[in-house]
Image (tube, rainbow, N blue to C red):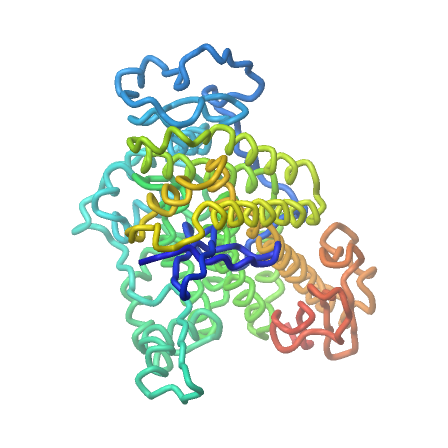
Length: 573
């Protein structure tokens, strides 16, 4: 026997759906168990610069913006190409107040958000100029679900290769951070520690991506690099392409979309490890070219609106930035190579963040998730109780309120409103079902989580709002943090390069940041003021106040101290 237990979390928290029995007490938890995607380092409103591509989800011809809809018209308003397949009347009204995407529709008569995304993102992107098409020619279908490979290559506009003849050999390594849970205050066993550290290849690759290394230090990584070394020019050429389109191939939800993170992670690891090997061997030109290519790849990928992809892009940019810091600190790096790095990074411009683009993606993803729930319950007689269109109109108002205000307090107020709605639903449920024995045991499924409480509460469409929407409100601050750190390190790198070039020309580091040519590169995105600088004859420290906004005395030996920055020692060049 199951009952609903109420756990009223704070407005800042995402609520969860759950069931339990505790004596005869009945209570209710409502909200999001739907998404299991971890939110790591996504973000919100910082203007980071400019981009060669549009940074917003363009409205295609089939996206309604300001169109009045006659309520007497059929709900699905099917277009000729989908009228034959829209055989079931959907539970939502196709109306700009409900969904901006009015076509194409899927077989159940719901908007096809995946198709709409692909149409807007691929417009004007030629396969020969697309970074992902170039990388997939090299990688083949490796890392793609077998059932999606044909469609994925078709959307890229390139031929499906024979993997037996594909040149690049990927490596197997752990892409995700490992989490070890040890209960009861016990020390982890040797087996648990080994699992946490990963395989020898995992450990070698982690070191090789961030430090100059030799063959004897990372023998397995060396074998992988050697097997693919002849492809370096092709990989660098693909990363230098001006356009970026990563198709969405999904039969499920946009929230679980199969973006091509495999290729991004493979080439991030390869280019960074290759660069650090070449730096150790004194071949700085090769290291420089590889890191410029990796910087291109990372900042192209940061244009993706999905926060999971954006996090992976930020990780790639962080790897590139840390490796570049090793290069410019090396005495083997000549003035000419520093100038090449300066030009290569400057041509990238700072990665741009358009919060409206990310917010619109969240809106599409949310609406797609609600449509998925609607499909699950569509054939049930109880589904007639739901006015899902009304729930989506309310949700769209919430998204619009966030989009119209740069103040994060708006999102906090919306969380509070949703929390209040959750409490009202819980109280209604407890009054309607005072005895848990009235509830038959229900299977743990998305369908029953929605349908069971709907039998007992008024306006059950509110379940869609409180169950899903909080998840999307929690990603904005994380996006802002990740992107702000990336633009900060980008600017610091260029200032570091120019300080070394200044030292090479004047035989001394600049005494203040004003000694360098002034531009937006001098501005700390955390304070809005120029970066801080301490200079002596033999070293210079350039740093940001970081997320806490306080000068903590400068960074450690890398970017990742309490203050974000770098320390450079005078070198003869």
